[in-house]
Image (cartoon, rainbow, N blue to C red; front, side, top):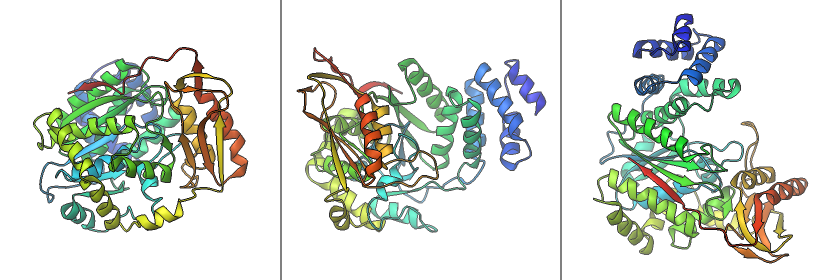
Length: 431
């Protein structure tokens, strides 16, 4: 291991066998944290080339179980988002593309910090289960075309261990390490093709288009080398996606969107991502054709019917959900504008943090969450408001959290005299 640390420190290229030995040794406990930490820092300074990134992805992918989806007919297309605020796209994309015949067998995670998790959102629905026994996961996809489950603890154990070490050694922000972490999980989950939603902006991990393009390029090269297809779509995350931030609130907004009543920005991002999924799944020859097909299943109700079947199949009760969250929380507090003007910014990070303070997110992995808590944005970027107008509504059951959340949410809003230029939602598509 010392030789491999020195080799990367000098900027030399590691072979497949050498990277395999690092990952297998670290996963088994034969190589200690401090040596892998030294190697990771050398990687951050010297980088990994395309081949090394592929070898690392492959080694992590095969460090545990690999899901076999071959029993499910058709091309299995997965979607991954690099994380954002109000990003409930999985809840919409799954039923939307499944209604057109693309099987969706998706493993999702939980939220941490200011970003939300798909599983937490789904579990706000009474009775809904995300843990499957035996072949029931694949059986559900074969039956109704859609299932979402918790990430298997035996899937890519190397990544879980490596990410925890990166988190405490300042080695998270290397693009090759980010790409291999994402790709190892996606490929181990059995997808034939993948659409990656790379979030860019104040509320996202990627802050520049150049970095987003680099990440996309590395992931596309890695996917191609491993016999998979991948398309990356760079989408904006300077402000939250949609109007709802918080678990049950986001489920309601996803349901509205599947019935054609969702916010314009959320609907647009979902249609864009879904259109690429249809092309990869060979259900449409072009994204334009795909758009027409997607709009049709939104308009005729088939997408929402697929959502209802999916929730029911996993034990969820939408009637109980509606009754439970009819009056969502004990306290509903408005944030009012202290000045008049156009809203030039609604910083996603601050909105996400405020929602977390209200109980909607986890400050640590051990934190419990309140499914009902969160924020509804009444005004967003480009809107004109008068002093005293309501900018947002805060929902919480924790009275003591209100002032802290209000203070944080106030920081999210920036005003100016002139109407700001429109900020594009879809920044770039990389194939």
